Image 1 (tube, rainbow, N blue to C red):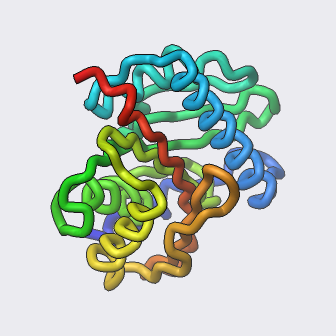
Image 2 (cartoon, one colour):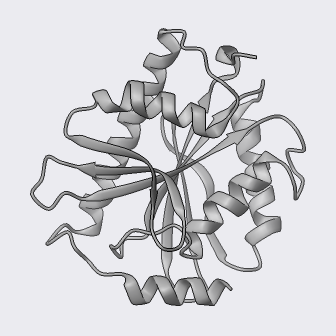
Image 3 (cartoon, rainbow, N blue to C red):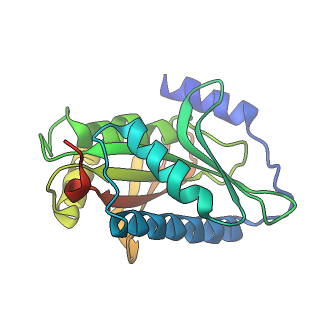
Length: 216
């Protein structure tokens, strides 16, 4: 299955962003992610009530806050022929309009190191779906992002260690984890991977703690 997904990805991939080099695309994505985090911080300031459900959190984040960011167009649940990604973004400022995709997953404090539970789903149904081509863009940069929606009392730094352990146990024999989830800069984490088809992926991670805003 892994090879079939990647073969499909390779057959359909093409570069549509003109002369944007990968380092520029990477820089633009990081800038966008930090702006998204600032929107999350504004949500906390507003004391916005948050449900525990992933789709509802995504709807509040995108439809109330991210739509206010200039020079970007946000769409929820953008699909392709393989899967539906939670947030699809186009940067409108440039003529070539680079695209970005983000997958979101709820994280709680249950079964933090197990092969089942929300941490495991973050890896299996999030990170790994980028690596096997289930989620993909039509460029060859292989740079994507995950957002963890934390709905329980949970120490983020400790849970990064849990996610790395779960990642090693679930996908460590399928892909080469060339960098575990590591703090890249304030509020932004990064991990890197090399697949069996010798593709190098970068995945950024934002952790958003909604535990004090949950509407039970």
